[in-house]
Image: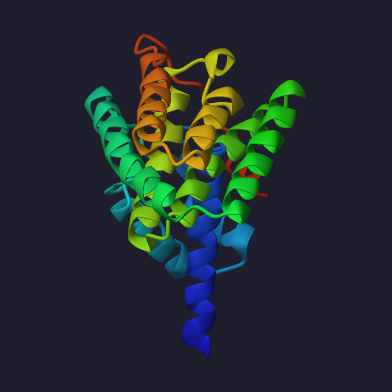
Length: 226
């Protein structure tokens, strides 16, 4: 029972840090202090170190000997690789989904896009970012490939780090219009069209990376996680 509780605590820390990165509340380069994380989550520093080690293996955290843990800062080359991987993975997920899509799945996707549009029109940036990434994760979930969905989950977080570093908030366009086009093609059973629109959408997001941008200063760790 103790092991299960400890595992749950480690998973919770990983999940909360992952969400904070995906929603761009934790910036690239932000220091993840063990003692502060232990206080925030009411766990031992050993549990925190386990969580940071897992996130380090996933590429979301950089562990520096004698300095500590930091939110990863993807290079330009890594950024390009992540978008290449996303186009490859999401093409396969879209293909699978087109072959198995149900009326309920289509309704769920359209409801999600409607929520995205509401957040976008309301100027709610944080919610817009969360729903935007959630759209891609929903496709992964509905496609029925747990492995590819898990790979995509990691790539979505890495994309959040990349866009935080290299893209202005004002030009964030992973939004409802292009998502709606993807859903329309999926609903019509147009595999080639759906894959083409998804690739176009991801290439559009990648094209807006501004490699001359300076990174924003990291947010306070407590503010990001609580």
